[in-house]
Amino acid sequence: MTEKELCATAKKAMQMSYSPYSSCKVGAALLTKSGRVYTGCNIENASFTPTVCAERTAIFKAVSEGEKEFSMIAVAGGKDGKIESPFVPCGVCRQVMSEFCTSGFKILVVKKEEEYDTYTLADLLPSAFTSNNI
Image 1 (cartoon, one colour):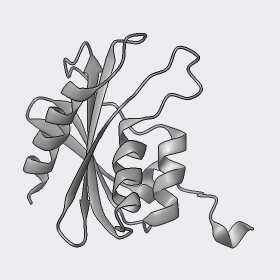
Image 2 (tube, one colour):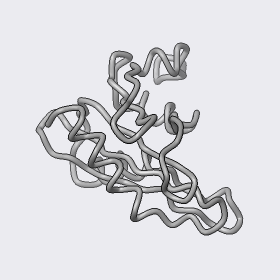
Image 3 (cartoon, rainbow, N blue to C red):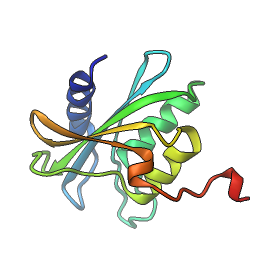
Image 4 (cartoon, rainbow, N blue to C red):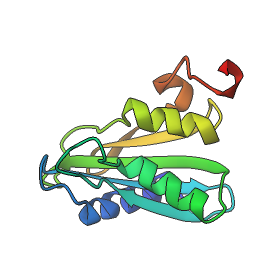
């Protein structure tokens, strides 16, 4: 799967978002090393703390089905589902990524309909807390 196809899959996943409080729809598409793609969307909750981001939804779906080796993830988001600026993964999602991915893991962040920025996990989480810290 190409990077553009993965970004398009993330944009499609935005439509499944449950975001009645913020109106911010976020979708993610996670490519595993085996070639499978797992999608996720954000799922909000009235008390906010139980809200789950699209990135974690995709990762947890993959892990729950036995996949633990990932190639890259694409993330797309926007108010009312309209992409106008990048929705970079939050700190919690970055930390979850560090549990399963190397520092070179590729993160594609859609910033406009046909444009995206590319980061590595190390770019977004330079001093990750890992099992080496325990």
